[in-house]
Structure formats: structure tokens, C-alpha cells
Length: 112
Length: 114
Picture 1 (cartoon, helix red, strand yellow):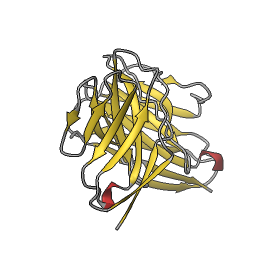
Picture 2 (cartoon, rainbow over the protein chains, first blue to last red):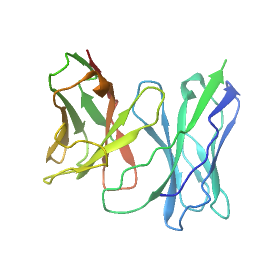
Picture 3 (cartoon, rainbow over the protein chains, first blue to last red):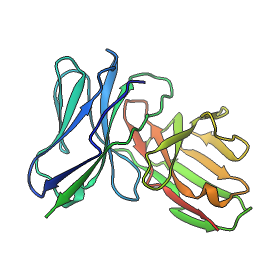
Picture 4 (cartoon, each protein chain N blue to C red):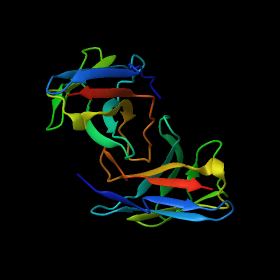
């Protein structure tokens, strides 16, 4: 599995954009980059994923470096409900039963 | 997105008893489900991969005779913690794949063994 490096924690003010970085320099060419988040005392929640191109959905945007060795999850306007641990996970697309390998993630604190 | 439920959401039991946790995919069929365990302030650790109609595959260090997994249908997997002890107290989370890339997670079950 590709190794990932994320900041242990980040802090943001409410309604400001947040850029959560992830380094995955050993990622293989077929690994997608998935982002999940986990709110306190809940199961993880899918946020977004991509392969090479930048991706947008209603929750966030994902900016992927051209060399794919890093990516950034962008929350355009942080809310208090976005306070969670965010996990960046390289994941090989496959029909077989691959589980997600969770690292330590980044704990995001959002202050009013 | 797809919904995965877990029951119960929390359970407190005495040491030596067995506890069953259910994981259901409510609006899709899941040929593969996963069971994770999370200790306080730690990340999720995969315990086992559960495939419908076959034996589960356990991660190294996870006792298959202690953590019994049954995946009898495409929408239900169960985890039974047998002869639970205080060190088994943890947050147990299941997930399911719908055949696409995304995994959907249950809300978790908080197990406390006294």
C-alpha cells in the first residue's frame, strides 16, 4: 500500500476555505486517491475521490498534483459540522474485496 | 449515498458473555463487507473481510475463533465477540462495497465490557 503523510491537525475559522494536504509519493499509477472523514463517535463518511484530474462535488474539491505525489482536499467554506478527522487513502480500483487502509489522518478543528 | 446500518449502536456486557453486532446494507447488495475496530484516539484497524457465502478472511493478529463473522446474505453480516473481556471494549465499525469504488460505513457500535 502507498504511504501517506498528513498533518496531525489543522485549524480553521468558520466560513473560511480549508486546504487539507496529503503526500502520497509512493502511489502507483492505478491507485485512486480517496478522501474520507470521520466525525466524532461516527463511522467514516465518503468525501471524494479522483485519479488524475481535479474533482468537485457538493462536499468538497480535490486538487491532484500533476505528478500525483500529493493532493489537497478543499472545503470551500468550513462549517462547525466539518470538524472531523480527514483521511487521505490511495486505493486500487478492483473488483476484489480490498479494504481501505486508514492512516492517522488530519484532525480539523473549526472555530466560530 | 448508500446506507449501512449497525445494531446495536452501543452495548454494555459482563466479562465472559458473547455479543453479536449486525451490519446491514439497506439499499444495495454487498458481496463484500469489512469489519474494523477503533480504540480511543486511534485510527480504524481492519479486522476481517467478509464475503457473502464464504468464510471471512482475518487480518494478522485477529483471532477468528473469538471474532466470529457470518455473511449469510448480500445485505447482512454479523460479528460475534465471543467470551468478551474488558480489552475487547472498542468501537466496532462495518463497511460495505456496492460494486463501485466507494465504501459505505455503518455508524459504529460502542462495546463496553465490564
